[in-house]
Length: 115
Length: 111
Image (cartoon, rainbow over the protein chains, first blue to last red):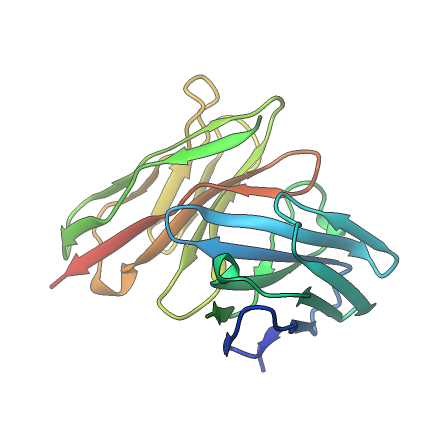
């Protein structure tokens, strides 16, 4: 089984709808991240969490919210989806015990299309 | 601010050709540097990393050397295979513990 899973893998929705993307991990890592990937822009950080009680905004948090339900679960919500939120979304985890150069482990991604 | 710049793609090569993908960075401190690879339909996975100047990261025949004097971390492979076709991301991390990615370079290798 994959260490970092994301559901759904694909989603098509309409403008104004509320959407939740879920991420689960079995790696036992405290740190979790949400990124979006757009063509020509690379990956940009939306939110990150260093433990269950810690939530931080990333580079592009407007229009998004997150919930860290447990060490293993980190959900991303779009309260009212808009077309420019169409993108590929990735969840990632890392282990702080390895210091600054910790490796991030990515899920397979969720492709979201907002019509 | 801190940033990563990498060459635009796609890079198109024949099998067994030599590969170079350029990456330069701007950072206020001394970052650790990474190359991540994204195969079609998959998430990113770490390819190699280097944590200090003059370190060489290597994996699966790929290499990159941390050059502080030129603020570069170019990715090289002596003989590419069709299975190397993917998108390659250069990235850095500083004491904020947040990865900063380049825009990605698509590599296409043909038989």
